[in-house]
Length: 199
Image (cartoon, rainbow, N blue to C red):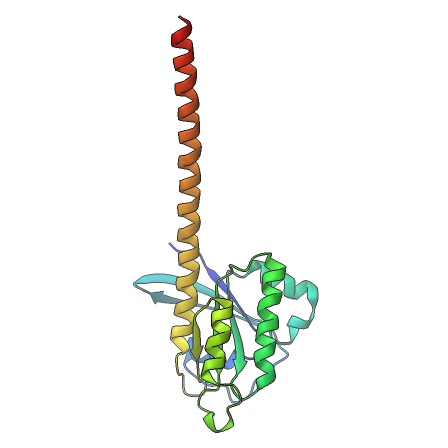
């Protein structure tokens, strides 16, 4: 059985996406300063995934709390609004913060440009989003929480990244074990040959 995954969500920008993902509804009113935690179970590639989803909302400004969820989270969805150019830079800064707190640039991440239905208010082009995703080396989606565009795909992409990272880690451990066993096997062989030659 797969272990639970915790997804740390960037500030309050993804609360509507979370609600669409879990309950298939768009919240007309929500308090962006309230931290919320959600649990749900889905199947991705015919395998179950138990998700613990944390919307940090306004709590992200508190350093101790922010660092705690960053270390605990296994994957992160970083969001910006296509109608707000400043939010694109905030997304870049948030990724840098994740890398610094976790001391690695290898954390599973998905970049999301939300509000894709508001094309008449667009300030960030699709290509700019793709360029930032290339910088992050992560999947990229433009979503609409209002119309549920690409909501499921975002979470599926993140779970696949986490699974891939775990598989890579297992393979790395197996290679390390084989190298260690091979080393000691050679040492024993050398020792045995030496003993044999002395007799």
